Figure 1 (spheres, rainbow over the protein chains, first blue to last red):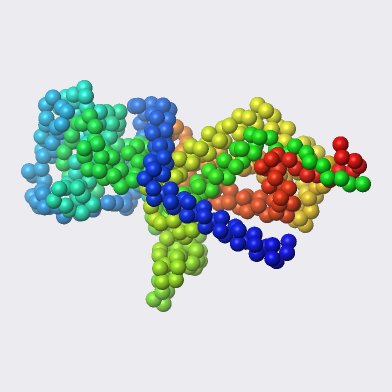
Figure 2 (figure 1 turned 180 degrees about the horizontal axis):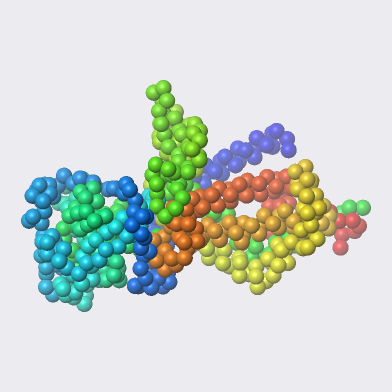
Length: 257
Length: 272
């Protein structure tokens, strides 16, 4: 191959690569492009629900597997005034509210929550970034709690409203963390409102006093600093309308993968 | 006298699935590097021992200037400009893989994941079509399974020596894949690509609950993530060798055969 031809080929290859990268970025920027790519989420969710038994448990590990330094991500010390006040008096006045599409709205103190049907499990926490940690969680099972409140027939999702403003504190509360799961996951036997981690009260960085554990999904679904559960038929009216803080910022609602 | 004869080399299914695979694997690789950049460290086992990754890529400072640092099995390499620290002069930033290797080029894990799972589906469906057709239509048995004679150590060694000299079979022998082609294609199609799917699924907490034997098989989720990365690297290596061989053994003849199916060989005597 002549030097001239080689140079020409190199130039052509470089321009093609440049075009390719620019095209990918263009698709990544456009709303339609993003929507088309997100169609895979529905396929993944349906496929996983098809092969995954609704009651199938996430693997539980032995005490020896517990991570010595479980990494804390997202908010690790909320500065929201309400939360700071609750924390200052040891969550003595803190109440977990369960309302929305339920027959009997509930308001439970931490002591009352600890008296509910509980479960302890040692599970793996998978961050969307790629790392994993293992911890022992103890908490109230969500299923019996929802039965106690009496979820109405039209409810399809449980929304978790949190105390922390990971997206910045705004007057309208738009920076507040929130998450949502469907009733399949809400009634899963391993779905907990965890108040203890590794036999200690849930630490501040990990969501004190209560965080969600919805094993079989990624870390961003495990809402921390949970204040209120709301049963809803639809979550389009909440936040950015995508069902969660990170979902509003481009992440998949179904985080099973 | 030698004449040039066009023979049917690749079937329509082979050609179509080949090019869909080029598209899917390129995007899976580049969006995969985007995802890797969100936590550029790899571990063995179920969980991440953050202080003991076997591979990590990051930035450090030396004499007041940022440098890219890659640590592999306890050894430290400076990889400024490509791994750990890259970008235009004055606009460099800390990122494991450089902007030109990721989709999108800026740091965006959420969009990277969308690309990855979209093209993962395309890749899996395309791969299933190829494998089913390869099994039923006989492509795997007829064209890819090496014959007993081809597998003799003497023959394999002879092929390795002639390949290293960039001499390739001519005439009748060029009608079929040689043994090195067969073995490397089979390794990619039956081992590396299925391993990519299996280790990818092992990283899914949902799929792990459905198939607990998967993380067991690979030694834990973080091991699966490591194997996913290693297999992707081996596929990149395969593609580099593949492209070198395409160029060395007749660029346009090879490319045409993968587009139109027709491949030119030189045979003794008159054109049939």
